[in-house]
Length: 162
Image (cartoon, rainbow, N blue to C red; front, side):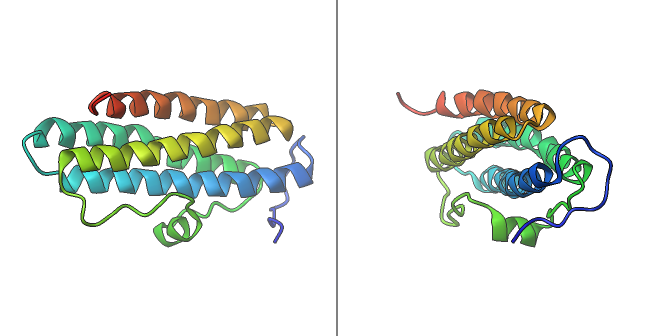
């Protein structure tokens, strides 16, 4: 189903904006879901390394959270409707569900790593698509997101054995 756009004045063609809105709404869902899944790890980690992992997961979540707003505002700036409720994000997210039975710090590190890596891969594809659609602003915004996610993926992986 093509994206319905609100009438706005914009130099990008309507078809490109509709494709970008669809792309960005998936990025919005994944970003909101990633934030909530990292918070899940933050709230539920147990074990001898509780304190540093609890703080690490919170820092990762804090780094991801502002991107939810940025992506949603880019959707609306292109004339679309941001689909940003928790239910909308859950329905549209491409990330695997976070396991409820994760407790141990290493388990949480692996689950957060896997979600960050999946998010990063999808985001790289979205950057490429935004470039193909001629939207340097969306491409640049998603590149900023990518830089932050890659950094936090490195931090998470640094806690796991090589």
